[in-house]
Length: 393
Image (tube, rainbow, N blue to C red; front, top):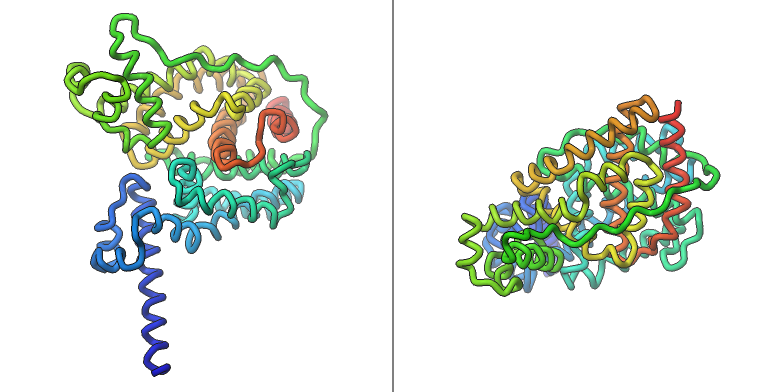
């Protein structure tokens, strides 16, 4: 009996791994909102019954992917990021993190995306925050009340997570993260004299000629922040806006056009070209802006930004729209920085670094990691000081 059970048990384990690897492939290719049970089963070479015999629902599969596939890869990323900070940015630690960020494995990309989605998926919320806290504690980071060195650790972790997310967007250009990683390992610098924090972004852009657009803007932001872009259906948006689908169809030919246009409007209203240019024109202003974004009142905008970013990893038109919105303000800001410091390449790196930290910090804050606005100061003094030092030559 035992001799027969062992091969069957081994086969069962191998089949479980086939399903999990297929799920990782599907998640990396289509995202959480784009995978189906049929798609995972087909990729694994099984019937859907094989999945249903193991998982009651799709979210249970996501938990298993996290626990048995992606958690270990995320741990490795966290360890590599913290090693950079604590070593002072030695060549070995910088190269190790740069290699991970240059070509993140699928299990890592999926793991970071699952972290970003935890707030709206209860099954993930049951395990991911506790797993993250345990991982950080293993590296000596206490997220409940971090002191200054631990805040620096969390900041570098935020940068690494955000770099993985940034690179997941469809059509994202290749980035050399090495100089930015060196900033994270730079020695402490005296506290900066920062300018006043920029005002928090205003409400979504209003269309004085069409009250229905106003209602759609508010409803779209609400639905996307709660459930993601893919689940922001025309029916849900029209209900939240208290409009009939006919009213919406009179303005947009289809759901995709509505989503792309309204996300574009919300993004532009949340951070106008004038605001982005002002923030990006100085590393200190960029740091203050990120601190404001991570504050409690920034939660709606954080959720929207994360959901749009995650959707952009699998939605070419949305990714292209986001890239177009950023292009003008980033080019102007890079020119201002280059004019101030005389280094166009590093000016561009400053903006890329700021975006990565923003994305990764949003993930950590949404998971409950202690990154309130005051806690950002030591990390930004270090990295902004390092970046400004390079720019100043």
